Image (cartoon, rainbow, N blue to C red; front, top):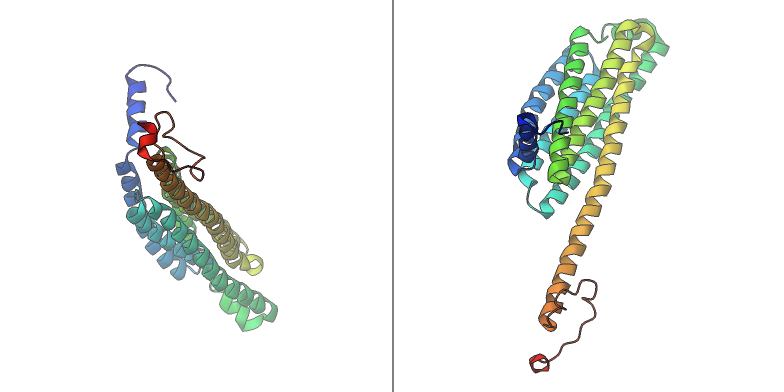
Length: 269
């Protein structure tokens, strides 16, 4: 928003223009690569050592985000490859969601079985309550991924790039999953005897978020691929129409490409 016409307003206009350049997309994606690499390793190590399946699921999500960053770098600015890249990212989200859901559901049912059985099985589970470092790592993930979402989405909107926008939503879904992880870790720590299953339940919810987000991006990518195909077909027909009838004022025959008459050149001499 321009609040003045002075130097400050000019600087804002310059920054907005910079966000429209291909370099902005590359820069924000490289930044995401660095953040996702740190989060993937950090959440994985802390999740395993601090007994949080939700954080381990979160680490898998960040790893899928890292893959999406590389796909974005490869496909950005390459026409149809952008839509194809966004399609790949959507499938990646769907597969990650399904795998996280499988692991979390297994742990969830195992915890419920231990609570019903009681005795030694429950005692073993009580030793696997998430600890404070898991809570801190989830908080760090929320802040960093929400920040990445906002700056990536802004660049994607400026450039009207579907693949950059899809990558931004990867970041937002990771922030959401980290919020669930943080809440479930807190509940499991506060009441381990009654709410130990909350951590695994959060992993299930995270998997559903991943799956539905991936499905939405998948549908949009299919639409984009279809639109690109129609546009190429129409362009070819327009070119054929221009070659067939070269009458001044009638060279642009949008909408009439299927209905033209081949006339000899001497007709227009």
